[in-house]
Length: 571
Image (cartoon, rainbow, N blue to C red; front, side, top):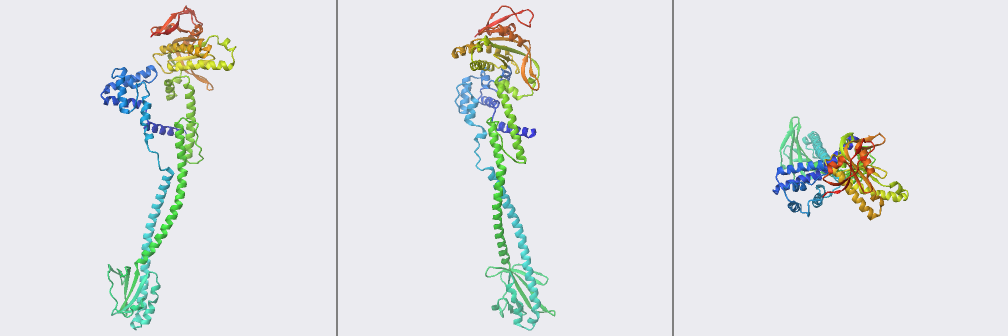
């Protein structure tokens, strides 16, 4: 089962990769276009792609190649916009527009441009089956008719030969005695033999003494016209000719011998058209039989076509639903064959994708897109395992929340908390961090893991400043006192990150002194304040305006420590 599922995923991924270009492909295509327009060189494109990769690692998110090229001074933004609009026939105003989406909308993917199939697969299977059956029946008929024709020819020839021998033997005495009546009695039944056209007995002067046609008795025997090749075997002469009526005849003749003396000759004519007519009748019968067989086979072919195409159609529909993100879609198919196994494997795959989607959707609420994509691309990578990293820890808490919540209804408290959590989460994700956990009204946020970022301290502080501004603004607009009562503590240092817990309950989290210090600093922060450690201050002293606070005694640390209150960003 895992093999089937992996095979399906591999095939689908290859199909999608073939028919749809990724953003990386568009980056390369755009780069090649700029080379073609003599805007940049190949070396410059190579440097731009390397710079793009470096910024992805440093910033934790992808930067468009156009912005990289402009940033390196290879071209102006206006020039790139002009080239893109002219080449792709779209209208963008700046490189910040969603160019990839506009190109895709304008041109569409290869699969979208393919014409819709006009012949359903069941009909193709039916037609193919009918063609095979018709060819098979006609081939067999051709062979059978050929053999039957040869057998009929030999049989008719044998009847003619036997009749000829019989007439030659029985005509000896009557011919010797010139008994015309007896001679005609000998060949009397010739006309009743199927395929025998005539029989004639001639004397030595070639005068007809007996004939199946009484009108020719006593006349001279005329030679045959249009005689073909003459052959002789066992004393019998064979040759073919065509009568005046157009009928083709095989003539057989044999001398009448008595006491080594030739008394006359016997002629017998076998109709060759009789054979053709008989074969034609058989051919009509075969055609009728073929029509009946084709009709019945059509019914069977259509049935089989539907039986085999219906599961494929269901799989196509299921694939489309999976492509739309409907992982709950199931294929209902009861078959004890490979298609049934494929449907079962497909349903199992959709279940796994649904679980993965739930994980992605749930985890995506706490981490940024770059972090999420990295985790989903390498679910068993080292990010799951314990390791040491430099990280920045933010700890949020609402001042006086316990006393405030005691005076409010639970519904109101939950609603106001959700507003607070939404603002905090959105800003943290915006700056590349992730929510480690919610602890009542407190929030623990982390920058720098699991995706390392050199500027994790700056990002953490910038996020904290923006969060306080957004909370104060939202608190005034929505009359939510909780939003203006948040204190933030920030510390940076080495932490241990990884999956911690048991087989029953496990979570990805960080532990270390920085986490504890950030929590203690949070306790020092008043409503709307951000308190940072000396370690954080040293790395953002040129970025943020700060106010030095008195030396503080922090639980768990020996001696007093320096703390600072971050006030605003230095522009």
